[in-house]
Every structure is written in structure tokens, then in C-alpha cells.
Amino acid sequence: MYDGVIQDLIDELGRLPGIGPKSAQRIAFHLLDADPDDVRRLATVLTDVKAKVHFCAICCVVTTDTECRICSDPRRDTTVLCVVEESKDVVAIERTREFRGRYHVLGGAISPIEGVGPENLRIKELYARLNDPAITEVIIATDPNLEGEATATYLIRSLTTFGIKVSKLASGLPIGGDLEYADELTLGRAFEGRTSVVQASAPSSS
Amino acid sequence: MYDGVIQDLIDELGRLPGIGPKSAQRIAFHLLDADPDDVRRLATVLTDVKAKVHFCAICCVVTTDTECRICSDPRRDTTVLCVVEESKDVVAIERTREFRGRYHVLGGAISPIEGVGPENLRIKELYARLNDPAITEVIIATDPNLEGEATATYLIRSLTTFGIKVSKLASGLPIGGDLEYADELTLGRAFEGRTSVVQASAPSSS
Image 1 (cartoon, rainbow over the protein chains, first blue to last red):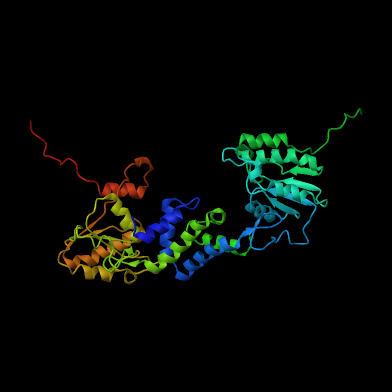
Image 2: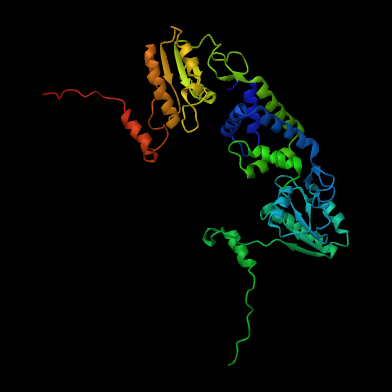
């Protein structure tokens, strides 16, 4: 509909995830009106990102260095390893400031439908890291969905042979939500994983 | 949160209209995984668009030529001029295939809040075009909102001196919508602009 390069830009933007034709058009016209320096900066960073970004040699998170900031930080606890699916999961966990150990990024989850098996994930690399006797616990933090649970089950089964503690993030009611709006699966998990608050005692014979 | 250039990309993407931090992160990771050629194409088209796109010398629509496809098309009706705010309005009207005349793109609408007055729009250029005796009608097709209506009112008032027909797009109920869901302003306009379907006749004395 639009002249050559304008339509090209709308088409390229429309290929990005979550951007429909209307948004693509809106962004394209925003860029046409924008300061040329702003647009040049976006174009440059797009080129840079593909040239400079690769995976951390240790934990496989995306980084611009050989080893990521977390793996090269001597203050991090080297006895605990948190296994996640994607680099963005690392950032989400870091935001909680709850975890001071290191990570291992699998690069996805087991999904027979999408043809992703354990051999397509960085599981061999995980096994290799577990040869380090310093590691005493592996925390599995895959997504709480079908693929993530399948991956967790696979890992739990195969990690038993290593003789180290393996734990998994708790499932349950999200904080700040309403119980009545929780879906039945989540609510079921919350029951299943309920934590004991007061221990039952033998009835006193007073 | 992320390493240098990855965070830069997320920041640059987050500056685009309608893209929040979550979407920016999602797009950034999509691009990190994407084929390098796809990303290079996006970067190239961004650079190209600023270099090649400018305004049509006649109607001021964005184009890559000196004159746009519509202005240089000899089959278009040169007697009618449709005045719109933005280039995307031209594309929207072209999609209807209802209009065979030419356009004039104002480049915005009068908005005292944003400091846009008539002198900031391409209204002088419109007056210049109206010196062409071939033009017999100007159709005002500004947005049906506060700024668009203000612009329409201004144009209608100033165009009376040219002695040519001036019309304005109809306001009313959108086709395909439910009357009960129409907002009161739209419904009010639909009443105001109601079209006569059967003429009243003197009561027959049979």
C-alpha cells in the first residue's frame, strides 16, 4: 500500500513478536517523524547485538563477555546451581535478590510438539558442571507449564545418579492475587504443597 | 539488568510507541535468536527509510519519489481534493476505493495544548493548490476528535472565500457496530446528521 521502503519497514516491524499490522504502521510513522539520530541508534544497536552477544562459557546466559557478570563474580555462592530455561529467567530471579548462587541456562524446555528433546538443551553441559565437587544443591526453576514440568521431571530423574540435593521452586498461589480468581490447577498445587504451620499434638488428658 | 548492548537494545525498543518494557524484552530476545540476515534487513530498512523518504511535492504525503503515486497518476480526478491530517489517513481512504480524487496532507491537526496552530500545518500549501481552477470540491476528512474537528472548523471558515464546494465526511454509527454500544456523542451525531429516507407528504383526504 505504501511506497517501497515505507512498506518494507512496516513489513519488517510486523514480523516482530506481538506487533500486528496496526502497531507496525504506528511505529513506522513514529520512526519517520523521529530524530534521525534516534533511528540511527536503533539501527546500530540491532547490528551490534548480533555481533557482540553470545553465550557465557560457563552458564550459557546471553552476555557480551566471555564469562557473564554472575559467573565471574567471586562473591556468588558456588555451591548452589539454579537451572532455568532462558536468559530472561536469570534476570527475573536476580530481581528478587533471593538467590546468591549461580545459574545454568538450558536454552529452552523439552517439547515433543516442537521437536525439542533433552539432546537439544544444554543438559550435557549441566552434567559436566556437576562434576565440580563444590556443588551441593541444584534448584530446578523451569517454567510452571507443560514443557517446563516435563523438563523438570526429566532432570530430577537423571540427577538422582549424581548424589546431590535437587530441589524445585514451590508452586502455589501467586502473592497479591485473590484465591477466588486462582485457576483450579494452581489452587490444586497450593493444596498439594501446603506447608505445615502448627504441628498436631497428642490430646492433653487434663 | 542485562549486559551492555542487550540492555541498550531493550531500551531503544522500549522507546517505540506502544511497546512496554516486557514487549521490548520479548522482541530483544526474539532478535537475539533470529537469523542474522533478518536483523540486518531490519537495521538496513531503518537506515534507508530516513534517507529515502520525504514528502510529495504536491500533496505532502510521505513518498520515496518526488511526486507520490497518486499525484502522478493521470487517471485520478483532479477536480476533487481530500484534506487529511496524516499520510496514514491517505492509505486508509485508498483502501475503501471510494475516492478517485487527490489528497492534501496537513501534517497534523490544530491542537492548542500541543502548541500546534494553523501556521504549523500545511494550510498555506492547500490555499496555493486551490488557485488551480480545475478544483471544484474540497472534502475535509480530518479525524472525528477534538483536534480534527477544530481543524475542520478552521478550514471550513477560511475556505468560504475561495468560492468552491467544501464538504466534510459524515459522522454517525459505525457499520457493524451495535447501537446500544455507541457512545452518546456518536449517537448524538447520528441523530443530528440523520438522512431523510421517505419525504413527508400532505395527508391524503380519501
